[in-house]
Image (cartoon, rainbow, N blue to C red; front, side, top):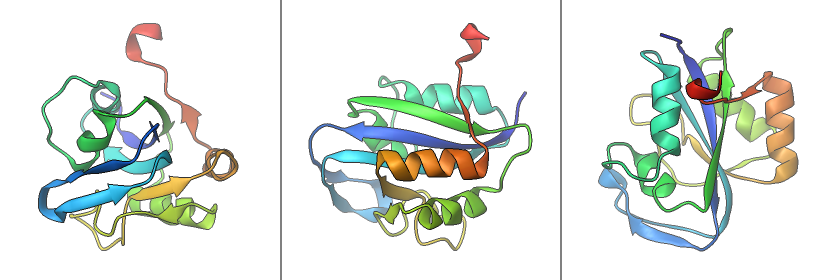
Length: 139
């Protein structure tokens, strides 16, 4: 099983309003968001699950991916960048922190969800050396 970290790119074609677990009610404007995550017990399965719209809600990001217009993913593999370092890199590349505590209940980061632009995404992918995720069945 492959292990690694990843960046999900979630495209919201309309504003999101709703409850997100312990974070309570959140509001996001339409646009592109990047979520930083890790999968140390199955990178392909985790990203594949996130990219599916039909799933039970387990993680904060599930609330967004289940209503997203579309979702893309980039992986940090085989030389995985630690999740929190990838979140810092997202901010350094011009992405704006979105919701305090989102996706980072097990660390001290401010957030793992960022409002992005095409330029900030290109910069993160380039600077972090991320690769586009290709579903396992296509490999």
